[in-house]
Amino acid sequence: MSSAATIRPQVTVCALRVQTLVQRLRLAASVIESRGQAQLPALLREDAAALERALSEQVAS
Image (tube, rainbow, N blue to C red; front, side, top):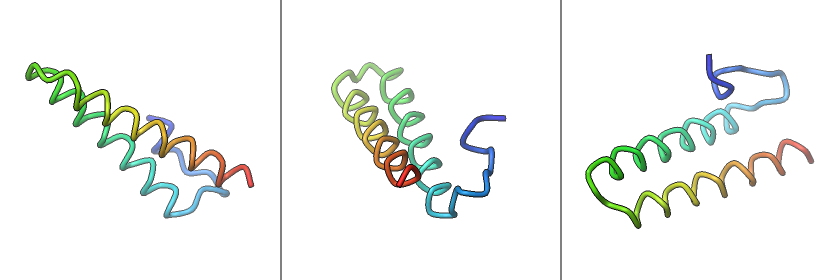
């Protein structure tokens, strides 16, 4: 089971939605990259990383 699927008491439904979005962004980046595109996957991965950082900061506060 992935860490995003692990539900901890302090994780809200909103946080789970963000984690799902992060996974989808990374999957989309992989699919686009497999079709020969280089720039867009990098941007999607940057967005995913930014969402993860924001979520981590929110959970920590």
